[in-house]
Length: 236
Picture 1 (cartoon, rainbow, N blue to C red):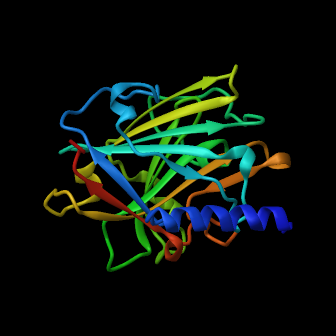
Picture 2: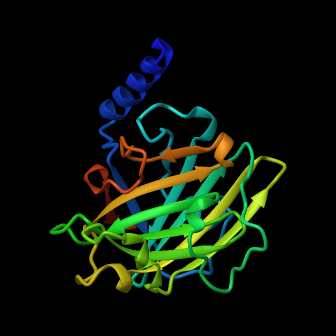
């Protein structure tokens, strides 16, 4: 790793520490009503969200060209995510289908949320993926099983929307996840979830994996490296 990259990483860590920001925690701001899925970050709904950034590769190195912004909000029924994803070269599945889930969508460009309310068994969590074309898949992951990808048969009822802005070389993905599908606790501000966020971009010959909490492994499925998502009330 170059001295410049190390200096940038140290500066980011030092700045967040001085500002009292915990880089392993995302705060999701409450909204009082559910809304149709929106991929416009300038909308009223998304403008009230606090941005989080995916800016490191799998092994913790800064990936400045693919710095991805994520926003999140919650209501009494749903958890929302918006990904704003820069790209160099899209890698898309031919003949996309958006009316049903697409198994093995992770082989193509996707935005991914790994999340769980289970703190007793960290190998259990849920995975949600959306492609630039609006394809989607949800999985109930159990790493205690030899073939955890079989969890794709689970259905959460989540919704997805996406669009590509070719002019700016960005694509946008929005998710609405029913809280009842991932959490059985009484709903309350202050509730926390285990969380990690990822972006997969580009063909195999020029692939980029961008992460929030780097797994320090070639696989994203390292629950020991997850951070936290915290439900917070809407600021007055």
